[in-house]
Image 1 (cartoon, rainbow, N blue to C red):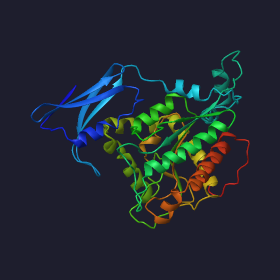
Image 2 (cartoon, one colour; image 1 turned 180 degrees about the vertical axis):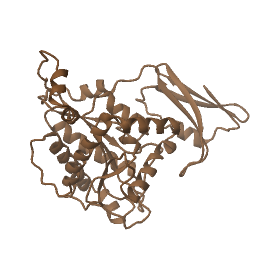
Image 3 (tube, rainbow, N blue to C red; image 1 turned 30 degrees about the vertical axis):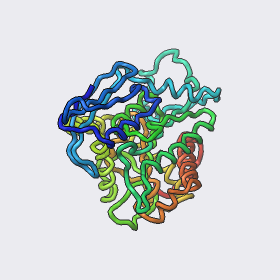
Image 4 (cartoon, rainbow, N blue to C red; image 1 turned 45 degrees about the vertical axis):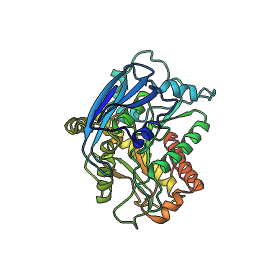
Length: 362
């Protein structure tokens, strides 16, 4: 029960509450009424016990002062359960070695490797390769908006859905989307969701804007431990990292900074960055066949959504939605399928190291 002092019930509140989905996993229904003069009461009928969190946010982007009420389940839902149900198609598993394992093993001497080997260790078993697909923005955070009103959150969700279908159709692979609808997921939660399903790779899909409307082309980014590789990369990372403020997530900057430092000095994280670069090169090569490139190399910047310490992660800017020509192409289902297919080809190339790739950007 939430009492809002100084608020009268009007059509705007009723319209907002009417947007609650019938299949919401936590909320069965919403009621609102005028309890007293200038006191509006909102009642949430819950399907399960929750832990509420309430805080305020200062104005940012197109939003004024906000009161945010988050409802967290006492027992978090395991996304892997849904993932396994979606992939119960009998696909034949493939054997794939963790890409990080090879890098870490190469850093050890033969003697150290032999000393650390477990006697009678069984051979690796086949398993499905899990691809975490992250559609940027969502919900109250529309992302960038083109001149014709095209919303980044809608475009990238459509591309992500196309990529998911391609992954599902590939034997030995399964897809997990950090969001499947028009709702916001915090940057940290996107990373944690990917880790909870033991994702082998993480691909975040965007279609951002830039201060110059003539900016065009696709780009691939990885986490950088040395700062942004260009002014554009720095600007985009700063813009994307503000998404939590727009989406209504309480951010503790000092904790985030400390975590980032700890991640970037860890040996596993450094190995992950090397693998992210290799993954990014494969995807960039594939995008070059279907789209103009903004930069001919994998760029680096401190994107918060790429900070999983143990998953090769990239962020793909499919195009600049602020460019009228690219906004028009992004509105085409055919072009979105081409982009998704190129990303998929790059993923497959990365996951099959025996494949020889002609790379002009190393």
